[in-house]
Image (cartoon, rainbow, N blue to C red; front, side):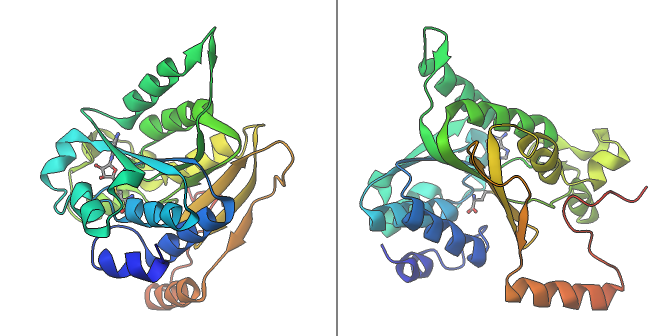
Length: 259
Ligand SMILES: C[S@@+](CC[C@H](N)C(=O)[O-])C[C@H]1O[C@@H](n2cnc3c(N)ncnc32)[C@H](O)[C@@H]1O
């Protein structure tokens, strides 16, 4: 399915950024992953882009995991979007009572024989809790299931709980904000996971950060270890406008936090 076709069919459905949707779609066309995993599907818009690209390639499957309790606000539901786009056969939908980390445990157990876990996935997209405790575990669990030369993609690199607090929220994806210290609220958990865990992991390289918001890493021992950064023209414009309006400088990923 062409990009424009899926784009029209999921128009107006949150949450994926259009530039990220395009990046994922192009990545799948280029790398042709056979087994894909998405942790956090929301309404399933991103899942449709992944499935549409797999359809265009002619092979490959996506397993998409989210929370059972989130079903109540997920309208339209992923199943509606997949039916609308005709992409249902490309996607297995999983809803977990508590967390995708338990789904990952199940997969590791299923794929373990003689004390060794056989990896399955060529591409894992993490777009869920944005929480240090949950997603640091998710990284190490995904790593067991990711094949050599496979890719990880992390969304929401600079997202913070402080941004939710500023909207008046007390809880985000079941996590209570009042129980967090000030640095836990202010510092972006996914950026910390990427910098302190993924980029320090000897099995990963070819780190690439786009628009300060999504980050790629490849499971390879051959690649480049210095991260590369890319800013789309639209993002550059938004950033310059924000800096002019607020008089503040945006802290780029991996720069030290101000005390
Ligand atoms: C931003 S939405 C995902 C958006 C989707 N990938 C897209 O771009 O269209 C984040 C999702 O993660 C799910 N989520 C948050 N924490 C989770 C957890 N621990 N286990 C499973 N799903 C989780 C939420 O229910 C929500 O649907």
